[in-house]
Length: 277
Image (cartoon, rainbow, N blue to C red; front, side, top):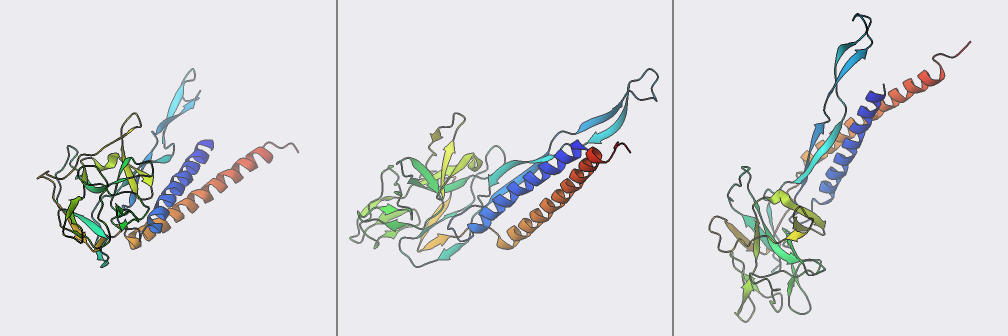
């Protein structure tokens, strides 16, 4: 009975974590460049149950009964880096990144492209949110005030909002002067990127330190184009996500009822069975 109790509890925990993930996706439907999270569940190894000291075997021993599942858990929470739709805004500071067919890595998966920006500490980070702005000093920044970096790794100074951007990311200020090229980073294994908050991602290695991604500029195998006056919408499918959310709720409630049934049976076994009189 205790084994079933733990199995139902693990099912509840798994669905709770999945619900939290889906809720995050729903809350970021309108976040430019947001990439939805996906999960995969896995069962714990099954156990072979045997009856000990069975009367069917002379001298005792054990009799195989069968296999028993020992619960389930969320194995992975990964991001879906598929291209989101573009939405025209007419805002000169909005720049959408459209990635074309990218080469496949050794696992048969395509990589992903990102804008190279800084975090609050000035460290290199990556984002797909092209909802940019120009700060008081004339630098191109994210909506959170983080610098957008150029090919040379320095912040891009565009002067004001009256700048133009080519499909390759070359920026020209209102005086017609080239001020640099937006650096686009290429991640061959996009699932190695970790969410940091605020729409920022970092490449984390085994020792926990962040590494820098190579630039896609000059890489003929990587195709992309920038669209000024547009943003990339979130790739979350609201209808599909709501369906998954309701299914997760129902599965959670089913495990909860099962857990309550086990609890009532244990309570009866402890209080009623074997009572004298």
